[in-house]
Length: 152
Image 1 (tube, rainbow, N blue to C red):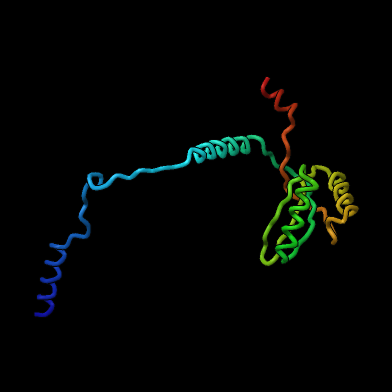
Image 2 (cartoon, rainbow, N blue to C red; image 1 turned 90 degrees about the horizontal axis):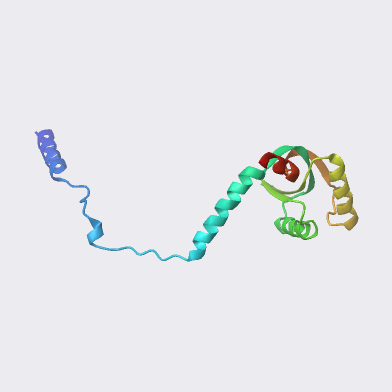
């Protein structure tokens, strides 16, 4: 008997229950979006950058210099900023592999190029520890002459 009453009450509750009342909200309020025009300009620049990036970057085998592997974040950031100031032509890579921060530098196609930069860094005493030359997949710069030939 209790089960029958419970079933009857439960079925009536389900029949008369309304989870949501859908209404036309456009008649109640109006939303106005105010944004800075520079956001659109930034979006266009990012789009152009991404398109150029996808067209111009090639990868291949090469070498990078492993400069430091430390868990001292301040030291790593100081080294990174110093390298970016003294060597703006070379790309600096900062990787975090728990618990170490690793600083790598350069996209060298030839090992001799990496060796020259290694000697310069040691002579300037920018890096106090050992510098290792690592074989890695690097970003290759496109040849401007080859691009002109492809356009013709």
